[in-house]
Picture 1 (cartoon, rainbow, N blue to C red):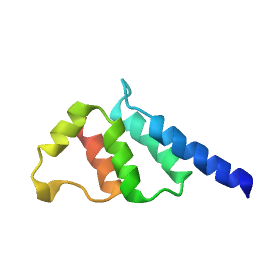
Picture 2 (tube, rainbow, N blue to C red; picture 1 turned 45 degrees about the horizontal axis):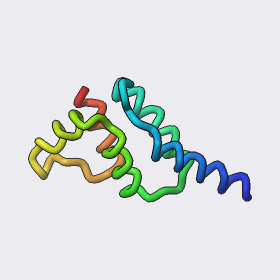
Picture 3 (cartoon, rainbow, N blue to C red; picture 1 turned 30 degrees about the horizontal axis):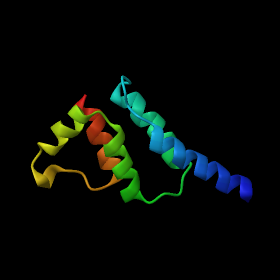
Length: 85
């Protein structure tokens, strides 16, 4: 049981420091998704980290969309970010 909590905490820490940098958005999302599966973190916090760790130019493009188009769920965010690039 302790080992499982340790793995979850480790995955959460890796999500927090996982930045896109020069990676293609698709590769970033795949790695991000693999880390999310290992955690038990709530979806709103995961979306926050996703926004925080993606290149700012991608976020600026997304924020330029009309409010009704902006994604609400983690799945929509991942698909939308992949389509931008």
